[in-house]
Figure 1 (cartoon, rainbow, N blue to C red):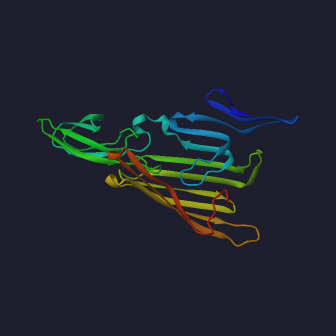
Figure 2 (tube, rainbow, N blue to C red; figure 1 turned 30 degrees about the vertical axis):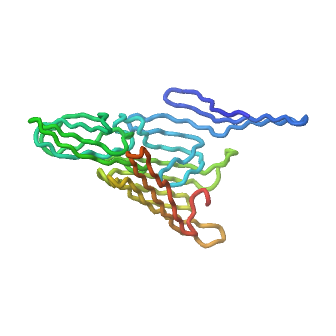
Figure 3 (tube, one colour; figure 1 turned 180 degrees about the vertical axis):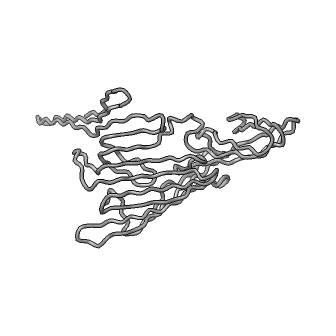
Length: 282
């Protein structure tokens, strides 16, 4: 058996087709098979820092469970931003008594260096790969030096202050035989960096007899790590049955331990009521 991807580029568009081929021969019997698993096209939208995809797609949502559908998907793509603005990294805040040089380092390695005028300062463009405990040194104009530490951790739902990540999809669920099924649906989710410590995220999924919404908060707990908690409410109308309505609660937690060079993560711990349904179950 073999599998792979064929593609072609047409201007800004990238056409892709995933295939799988099988060949079996046993005791004189021979069987062959070939199928296109997924056919889609995508292009970058640099002005919007987003990616547009058309065709057979999997919903890639940080809020709702993934499922396969045929339609379109528009999502923010942080890879189009400068590296120091991708992902999440906390602000480093402090007060300079004069024109000062600020150095952010980790285990003796300099990560960031800048100069600031007298007064409060905020560094918002640290690289998202930064994890663990950061050492901040403030060198004043008269030579005096002060230091403090900042703990960092991240989970998928944290967003830099003032930024919004979004994901919008429209289409119909589809099976591996390429046939669509069910009603037309729309799904959207977002994550908004409210401040250095808080992010608000949520979304809605509207699909005729199946609808769901979600809302949650992510919190950078500094020395205690990072945590998010959200709730999803689903309402499903089934033929010949009462409407099924239920809630699901999801918890994420992460904490970095520099002393042990390790990290503890609870990803997607979920508690659901009996009548809660996701789109795939419906």
